[in-house]
Image (cartoon, rainbow, N blue to C red; front, side, top):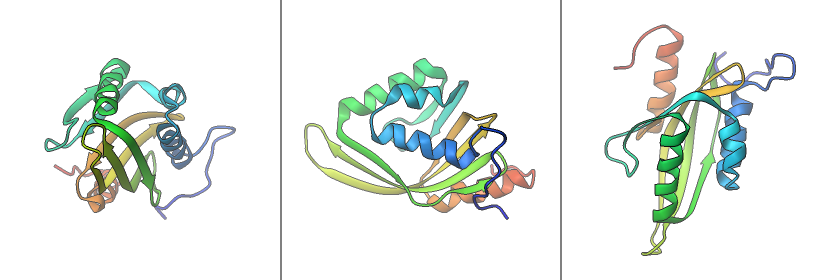
Amino acid sequence: MPDTEDHAVGDRPTPSETVQAVYEAINSRDFEAGFALLDERFEWLEPDQTLLSGHHRGFEEVRRAIEMQLEVFDEFTIEPEEFHEYGERVAVPVRQRVRGGVSGVEIEVRIGHLWTVKAGKILRLEVFPAREDARHAAELAERGERSD
């Protein structure tokens, strides 16, 4: 079954537990804890129509993207709604809330995150505008198919 299962290896957390920990770090603004969960080769893919669009690779690019986000938004939270594990991949429908720093405008979006976790470290985050697409991509990857 693809949903979260308890299959931690030794003291290593499951992929879902690792992803849950990164959301906790993001929401508490504990970036040191968040970066500790990332593999040094971490990559973050954002859709073209977003503020942080593109492919961010490595700690420095990711740090710059986060700093840019913090310059624009006073508040930023991500609420994971479910964790669906597919081997090393975890699909998560999320509710993201932000408030503009200058405008004070609050925005809420529902999107999908697809995380890849290997040996307890997060290798990749791919963001999908349609939340169900993250789960579909994880299912295709598990079957060895490509989503593009």
